[in-house]
Structure formats: C-alpha cells, structure tokens
Image (cartoon, rainbow, N blue to C red):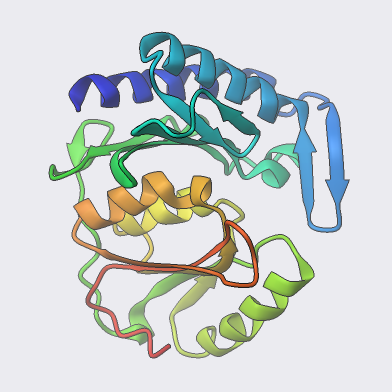
Amino acid sequence: MKHYLDTAEQAARRAGKLLRENFRRRQRVNAIAAHDVKLQIDIEAQELITDLLLKEFPGHALYGEEGVAGDQSTEHQWVVDPLDGTVNYFYGIPHFCVSIALRVRSEIMVGVIYDPIREEMWAGQKGEAPKLNGRPFHVSDRADLAEAVISIGLAKTGETINANFPLLQAMIHRVRKCRVLGSAALDMAYVACGRFDAYIETGISLWDIAAGWLLVENAGGTVDLRPLEHMKDKYSIVASNGVIDLKL
C-alpha cells in the first residue's frame, strides 16, 4: 500500500498547490445554488488528480465529486474530493482541503487529507498508525460531553439542514462548543487527530468522508456510516473518539 499512499500524497500536494496559488483570485463560477457553489477550479483540481493517479495506475478507476473516470467495476477505485470547502474557498475563507482515498473491493485502504493553507497532510493506510506531517496521531481521550468540541455539518439542501439543525440546537447546550466550519473532510481529520471529539452530519457524500473514515478508525476512533434510503448516494455519519457518549 505504500506506493498507493505515496502517490495519493503527491496528487493531494499537486492539487493543493493549484488551489493555494489561485486562492483569493477571481473564480469562474460554473453553478450556484442556495447553499452551494461550483467552481471551475474544482474541475481543474480533479483533472490534475485524475491524470496523476490513472497515469500511475492505469487499471484503476476514479469516483469523484466532479465526475468519474476509468472502469468503475474495477477492484481499485480512488474516491476523490478535489476541493472540500468550496464555499469557504470562494469567499476567501482559508479552511478547505483535498481528500483522496483508495477503495479496494469496497474497503478503504488508503486515505489522505491535505490542507494547502496550513500545509498539513494527514495520511494513513489500513492497519497502520496514521500520521500528520510525518508524526503519528491519535483521537482525543475526552469522555465527558460537557468538555467536548463537536462539529455538526449542515450539508447543502433544505432537507439536510432541517435534519441537522435540531441536532445542533440540542448539542450546543450539552457540549463545550459546537463548530460548523464548512469542510467535512477537515472535520474528519480534526476528529482523527484529537482537535474535535466528534463530527455528525446527515446528507454527506462518500467522497467527503472516505479518507477521513480510514484516518479516524486507524487513530483509535469509531465511524458509524449509514446510507440514506431517501437520498441516493448520501449518508448519515457519526465519527467520534469512540469513548464519548453523544447521547444521540
């Protein structure tokens, strides 16, 4: 898996460099919705990642937020969000990342999350301790909900906002702080390395959380990921340090 992990890190850094160089520049908007924005640079970053990964591994496939590439029936599928936190990026908020995971026969085997502004790279492979910029990390050991910092994602549609907002209202009175930062992948990375104690959201896509899923579990935490019956390719997720009682 090391070759896969090294290549994923290289692809994340290359895409991150593109994002960093164009940050706070005027962006070409491809689509806009009430709670989301689609930028041309999302596509450019995914194309860069796709070219690098499939050139190195031509028999693999890629499943990303900006489309698919390769034979999707192959056992090796890269799951990619080239820019997680697009709205933050568009508004000049320096909180976004690149997320790349490798799924082999439906199991996540490699995951990297790269924050190009802070130059932080979370990286891990199945069965081994994950590392942040080369140093091993672990989930927090906080068990008391009153001491916890928890991220509640609100997703992008009226339906998902309505589903998540009551949870935010309930949690905000129970925990030390709730955060809504706008990047699911970074939320997962923060849970994995102990900055957050949990991340909860309904209506998330696999590319948002695939890499973080591996990182959280390898760092000693737990991830409860469930498909939503009424929303195709969407999931509810509870990622935590594994010891805190969220009382959900």
